[in-house]
Image (cartoon, rainbow, N blue to C red):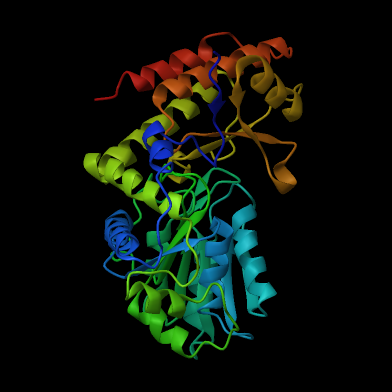
Length: 384
């Protein structure tokens, strides 16, 4: 039987132990068994978030978590700064606009760093505290750019604006220090680095954010965090949860915490280096040039001039069983993306590079077979 390799930024492969856990019998989500479960996984999630703040498990997608982060803390008419350098930064801004926030988009070109200087200037000039929130994506998976959240936090200084951070494609794979970085609202999804299928989202809320929420005038029903808090106090969720995913969440968190956060960070860093070195060995251009700013979970590579993205993806999928991602939006015809997060291994990465080489040669590109794989192998051999 041929193995299929899912090498996209998400959803990501799910370990066998997780799929087995999802096969458990359904039980009462208002009973003591679920109470014990949700209390257990909530405390374990806090360790992954590096937070002692309140934390909630939502049955929704990553975009649902983004909407939750907007509707609970941003009132209609509130002035909001949105830092954006990719598709998901734009999405977060558009959600805020949908709920009638006054959004000022501090925009950078896709694949370029955030405009940190512009943010600092706007915050320093806002003497009356009219800016109520800063929206920012940690890992912009549409471009393979990792933004510096710790720097954003330091630039905020004593400004009262809430910092609402999307860590959907980074948390679990990259250091996210919620308390240390003073992240007021941190949100993520289950289907990326946390080893789970889609269906759950997680959000942490600190005391400053709770204070803001008490005066928030935004209408909210399903995504109400006040409801989530009230029900969690008695070991429940306000609405029917995705019970199989919550059961699997316990298995996933046990797997992650058994080896420790640093093990996951090191593993994802190694895979990122492997892909980047392989691309360089093949003479391909990386969208994000500086490794310090490069995503640890997805790498965006510019296509050779004589190759069409759709042809490359089709050949890799149909002949070699390797699924990679194309670009999004304005980059849809310019880049392809290789995901290397979650249950992906360094050997999966080597297979992907080999399939990429063969596909490029078959499509007529003048690359040397083995020139990328050998560079990736050199990185893998550094593994301790």
